[in-house]
Length: 512
Image 1 (cartoon, one colour):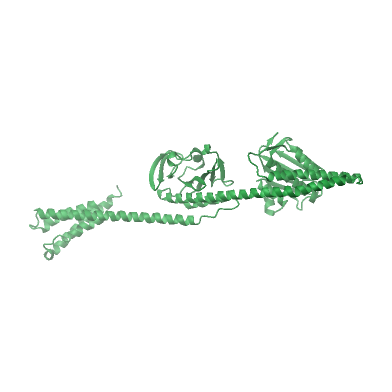
Image 2: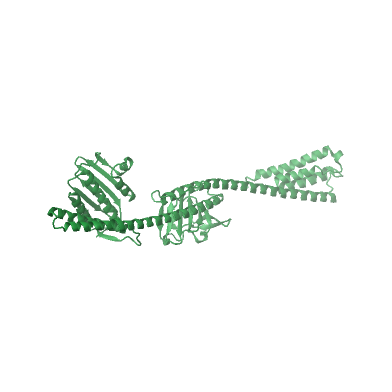
């Protein structure tokens, strides 16, 4: 109201000045224009109507009628109002209001045009950002999702992005967030996050300035913006999102349905809603493509594992059986020397153990369904494996497991045995020790494995931690890669008295 008063005052002042100029001009040329004395008063009515609106137009109309009646209509300098004056007033009023209406319509059209141009520029800016949407299909789903969320945040000018989605053929809700830098994707039961948003907002895009209070929410649905009050989000999401301006939009693709939440938006105004809709649509399409690519990779890996297991079973395993039978036949030869006979039987037993290990490896390659199966205490199998290696390499190998009844899942046990096998063989092959020791300790979250020997050690001296091993490409490369794939750590210590290789692997265990 206060801001409009000066402009209104200027409009009325302009109306007065326009009538004064019209009266002065008419007075100056009265002899040339009489009896058309209203000719200069029409602009005096039209101009205030164009720039001042209805109020100044009405003021100019009344002042013009009064000036004409008093100064120029005979008898002059008297208010002798007649029919002509009434007609003149009616014409002035009609012209003034028609001009004011046209001017108001023109201003509204100009404002709408400016608003449309602004929205168009914003849309073009959003499309330019979206046109640079990154190609996200790669070997790592988590890295692709992290890259996608970072780009979406830049498109909408938001600080944090949270996206939830579910597939028709899976009973889970997946959640990804920019705030989680280690693993951006987590899986939740539908009961943990249902409903994600209030029922009134399920199919709508909405914008709110505060997510922790039952405040004002702008809702956009089918192009119509309305207002709603209440708590828009599930409590779990409220805890995940900062108490800052937030916008959210749903998406649906051929295989997925979900919703995107943008938190910490710089310009939390209704004009941001189209950008949020476009970004959510692109996120949905990207997730759909990445999930399909991930399924294709899983199928390819599954088929490769089946093929490799079949080739190992039909090839190497059968060949080892033939070698064992031949060794047994040679050992049973009466002419064989006793020492040779014993060595041949030892080799045959070693091959039998190796065959069992290979069968376990083949079983591990085959796809499994259901939850991981406990394999029972691991101590006996490790001692058996190390006993075979001791016979083959003619060096004692001590095994200590704490707690003695340590149990692991089949997958964990397979990884552990392969790591211990490779570490022990490396020590026997390269360090030429007189003895090797294997020590395994476990708590609820981590396996700690130590393989030590009294051989000649590594080419370097001292202790090198995992990060330095990776940076320098030092230590047993295949062991280092295996530990890294299991999200563990490896350290190597070497001196003149021998070497020590340590592993720390995060794993869920059950002690029997």
